[in-house]
Image 1: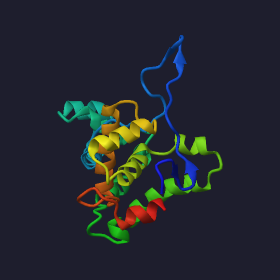
Image 2 (image 1 turned 180 degrees about the vertical axis):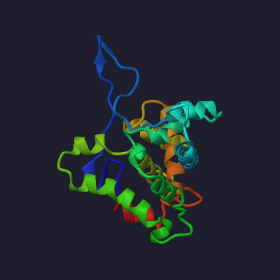
Image 3 (image 1 turned 90 degrees about the horizontal axis):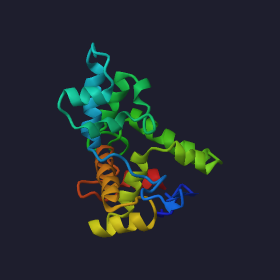
Length: 204
């Protein structure tokens, strides 16, 4: 496993294109998500879907009306997981994928099928750019977090900047925050945020 490649494919790096003769300040095409706790976001999303939603609100509006942080909307981002087209039962399966209490290193069968689907798309797809464009930042973030687990926090951020996966220290911090929360939820990472056997099996 390498920070440069995943499943034999070179990982997309961000860039700063020149716009009107000036180099763009923000990194374009990196792996930076909106910073949030994945487990909480998924739980809030289930409550949103279970509600009658009489006001015909979208998830972001529902979060704000209920006093939750707006960053939790990210779990419903169609560029990540298309949860709007999934059943309530499936979302409950994702929530209940407690890595300490199930089979397959704790991941339940539905969650394992869900995660393996993204791996299969990259492994079998010949067009690398298409694969990364459709690949969730959640999974890439936990991959980075696991591989960087032996470094200090500032070293992790510096490496993500150097690799052009993030453009600022705050952006690199968002990658690590989301990677850790996603990793703990699905048992990619242990309680010390170190890679588990499942991490090594999935990303090998």
